[in-house]
Image (cartoon, rainbow, N blue to C red):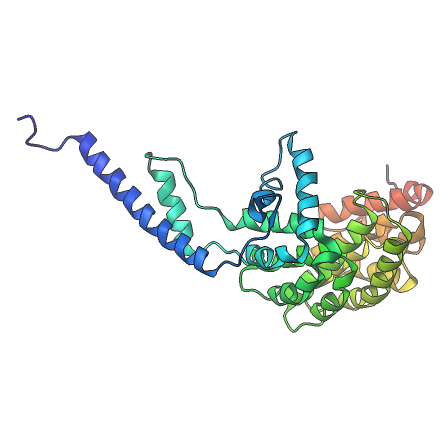
Length: 325
């Protein structure tokens, strides 16, 4: 009879209510923990730091170009006051509880809502450190500690942030390249390469004499340690160091010699990285041509392709003699 048995609809509704209630409890608990532990946000022109950071990610709308520039200016105006909150964002990690809550949120249909994921915090914080550059150098010690974080994403974005800060991070990166953990050594090398890329390849702004001098000092300090990393017992460290050296411009004889030796590495990743780095040097890498020719027969397709590109970039005549089209 009508009303004596639950309908399929009412059963589904009860399930939805149960899901929504569970999500609400989890969400409130998570938000309470977040609010109690977070530092006070900096404010500029009546907008909080987190509001300004929304311009950085997700990216893709044309109107965001101007918003991005305004956010950069806001970050520079807030200066070091922004650092405690940015460091908290770099440390963000998706706990099992948060992941479970998002899974439940996607199953219910009462409201559209999803807890912020760590990637959003990481990307926005990275962009903020890019805007702050040397202003953010007080954060270097804490970022250096995060290179050894158990969450690989936290460690990687901490390395990115150190690279964005620029030459002032040299000491921390040198220390990282001598850390007992291979992961930290690799991230230190990667961050050094990121700094070099920003200085030489980004094209965001002209490099003035002061910046050029600062980068020159940075290169003199970190490049010898990157060369040492080419002989590390961890292939990821060797590969990251080779990749980084390709961003530093004209190579010294030690740099070119180290990368040339790495072309015969037993692991394909360092071979790929070394081949790509040598290609960046163009005609300055003539001494590496014989070793590159041997890589044309490498068992790895990507190594063969990179060797072809490198030979074309260095010496067209030598490439033609080797049968490179």
